[in-house]
Structures are given as structure tokens and as C-alpha cells.
Length: 289
Image 1 (cartoon, one colour):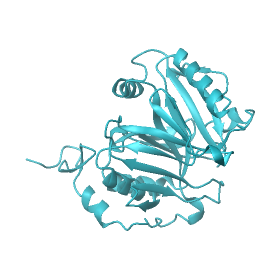
Image 2 (cartoon, helix red, strand yellow; image 1 turned 60 degrees about the vertical axis):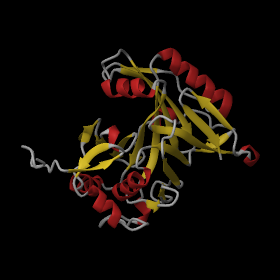
Image 3 (cartoon, helix red, strand yellow; image 1 turned 180 degrees about the horizontal axis):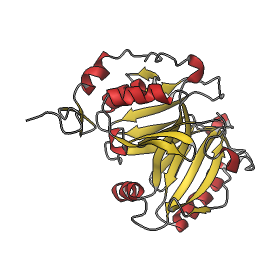
Image 4 (cartoon, helix red, strand yellow; image 1 turned 90 degrees about the horizontal axis):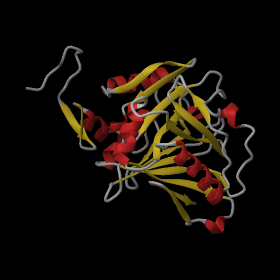
């Protein structure tokens, strides 16, 4: 019989993406307007920023292949690999406009079990995580806890306030930071010396394959107080004037034959005639727009 456990969390559930979620989720999503309102204390100048894409590889050789393909196809320069022994992986940073594209490869299997699981399910390297900059972590936390969503982490990480939602909830790992100061986001310092691409200028969005995509998009828009295009199943983040940062979007879609998660990343081409061209790096398609 459904009920509450020792934590007091109601175990009765709705279903999102084929997974069990707390009771009332579908009702919350169905009651939300097409354009989500900003929470009390948040302003239009402080819309969430999709700051950071994380591409996970299984080995250093695969990471080097990704670096070469980004440079050859999109003119994207990358930093030299850094080994972060305390975190159990190596990392490479790239900048596309104001967005960080990070490549990671675990040291050994078992050290980063969430990344191992992603790679096992995906079957190939690909976009593992999306990182947002939030300007009111307390308000975001209230929405998450009110919805009884399972969290992977909610803590101070290297001096920054970090919240991470379990990856299975929305098809991709969603992680947020309230950075102090505002420009102290991951990758900013290490990537400043990288030359800009002469092929692409920004990452305006991505496609995410997920069961129940309309419900998923609706709930993501609620959590992040973003605009929702329910017909396109797109979560749209308006330009942020505080940072500043360009508009971007997450478009949810049925998986079909695709793996669950981010399957396509948009790259805004400097040459508009190249819009529509694509190239693939392992399990992720990159599309010029």
C-alpha cells in the first residue's frame, strides 16, 4: 500500500519518463501556465543561464578524438588536459561564446559511478550533464523540495552553492550553481586564454530525448522558471542582463530509436549559409544553426 517512509516523503507517485516520481507531479505540471512565472525574489534580469555542457568519454584516447573533431569541424580550440586526482577524472575546457564545453574522462571505472552508468547505458561518449547558473539557489531549492524530487547533491562544492538533480529525472544530469562572485563559474578562468572559434559563435540550445517529453519539458520550465512552448516541447531561457548571456533552449522529444538524453547540440554558425550542416562526435550530433 502506498504511503510514507521514515523520511516522511510520500511514496505514491506519478510517472515521468517511465520513472517513479512523487505524487502530485502531473497535477503540478498540468496546472502550470504556458509561460512560467518568476518566483518571488527572482527578476527578469536573473533568468537561469545554461552555462556549461559536459561531454563524457570513457578514455583519454576518446577525449583526444573529441578535441580533434571539435577543432576540425567547428574551429573550437580546447585547453590541455588537466588531471584532477581528487575528483577522479581528467578534464579539458573549451569555450563557445560564453558557454563552456567541458570534456571529462574518468581515471578508472568505479571512481565516477554516475559517469560509468551514463556511458554504459549510452554505449558511447556523449553529453552527460548540463550545468546552470542560478541567481537564487534558495528559491530553486524550495521548488525542488516542494516537488519532492530526488537530489544527487545539495552542498557547498569548492566554495560554490551546488544543487544536482538525479540524472534519471529529466533525461540528463541537471546541475546548478549560485556563483560568488557572478563571473567565478567553472571554466571561466581556465578558458580565457583560448582563441574564439572562427566557425561558430555560441551554443543556443540542444535536443533531449525523453519519454513523456511534454510533461518533462513542463516540469523543467517550472523548476527553472523558464518559458515553455508546449507545442514544440521546448524550455526557453530568455537573455540574462545581469551576467549577461544570450537566450537558449532545451527541446524535449520522444526517443524513437535515439538514446535517452542530449542527442543534438546547436552551434550558431558565423557563416549563416552553413545553417543545417551537421557533424557527429560519437553519440552526439552537432548542428549548425
